Length: 334
Image 1 (cartoon, rainbow, N blue to C red):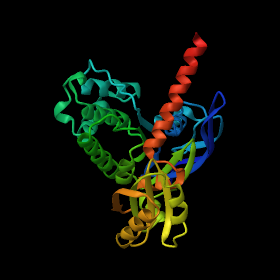
Image 2: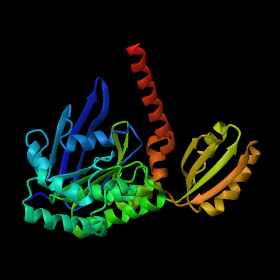
Image 3: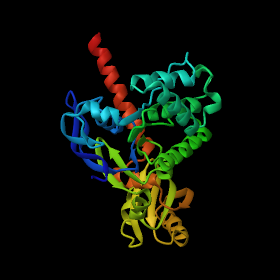
Image 4: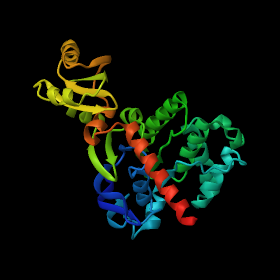
């Protein structure tokens, strides 16, 4: 019997000439918490939609819970739960009524429905709030209820698409803990999409970093950070650092160097003893260092290393592309 919950080979999706997902291949082990990390527009949601049979791939193959995503769509759907970005709860019903309706859709008998509703409400800590109308729930409570609904039919695999999007930092952290406990207690395979670097780092056993529909890196968060090695020094520079970057690249102790928006990010060994040398070198080249920060590598640094841009820059670029597409559609309508 296969140890893989998901197998994907050369999966591709095009929309009117635009490549949203570009030939990705990967596997997810049973019981694994696997992350798809990247900015808006990277292809994460499109990947989830293909694996959950909501979209047909343009080419490539995929198996979910041992079933082909094209030939065995009904079997795939019976074995997965999906929590979408947008809330799909009926806010005029109670939590219990929402779960009851969803369980009936999956054909659960009355006794099993009642037992299962109690189980999933306990899992997400909503047992005491079961009879309250969902319109009176907080954002975090709604997300927990949606996770409960996705689990009602005992799926083998749970897809969570941006599960903490729009939540405040405190609520987001609580949702992280619920997801982690759920994965540990129920031993369910979880596929998580997120553009929060710290979310992927905290939750996932492995992450795939997506950029423009492709995987640019895939490994455990720690191994990805270990690729960079050493310490990360960030310098905020006043002036144009172009020539300085070229000269710093010649230093043997500089493992990698990136320049973006007036900042230099260097990965070096023994960063604390290199800072004075870097400041002196910048001043000799006529540049003023406004700020210096020393830390260990993060997934944001990994993202920058593989894509050449920070997460925020990627998101801004994606937003700009979306705005141009909308403007183009509006002009054609006129």
